[in-house]
Length: 282
Ligand code: AMP
Image (tube, rainbow, N blue to C red; front, side, top):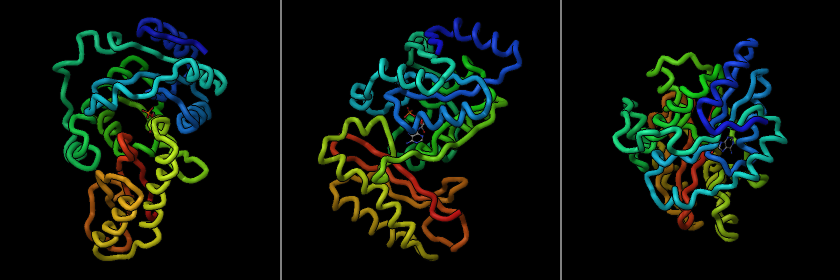
């Protein structure tokens, strides 16, 4: 695996591959890699394209400075994992490489309602930061294919919107969430859970499964109330537990029994904020 820290080195390698008619598949990450990230890479490799993985902990998408300061960094281990998993290239820029003019007064993206619901509501500015870094990464890599995870479902919608806004001809692939044996969605932030919290963390998935089992046509709020109570009983501080239209993510208060629904949750255990989601019906 080749490691490029500079955009210039990256672009030489990419130009070489393109000159041989090879396509580029891109997997952006913030590192502290786990099997979820490696699933994205496996799917990217299965496309037959050359694979580029980036690791960059993007400061502009953290609305909570404590979360940024405590974000796990395990670069040596990440490099070993990527090499063993067959990545062709690791793009490992530093802050000045991606934000040469600093991170103040950056551009703004018109994301519409996506920015004010769910993650957008509880993490103001987060999706602007996601778009700011994704634009820079996409301009550096110029991929044919982009692989991102369902675990960050709203982020997938935001990045698809960004591709539209920038008119970038990139094919987007959303990859299913990889879970621990007990159902907890794999996440770099799980490393920050203590033993007791790790034991409780699986209740986020259990609650989503509970919603799927109990869902019936009609008003949704009574069921969501029960779900929130389940989480609170296990010691979670709930940001949101919501049922939304799967395609648009618009939250729903009433279900007609047909419309594809997705349940989404974000909740804290101590200082650690976990998110997850589950399709309710296909
Ligand atoms: P992150 O490093 O958390 O920014 O994640 C990088 C990419 O990996 C994003 O597209 C995530 O949605 C995806 N991802 C994170 N966790 C998982 C998981 N458990 N299963 C599948 N994809 C994941």
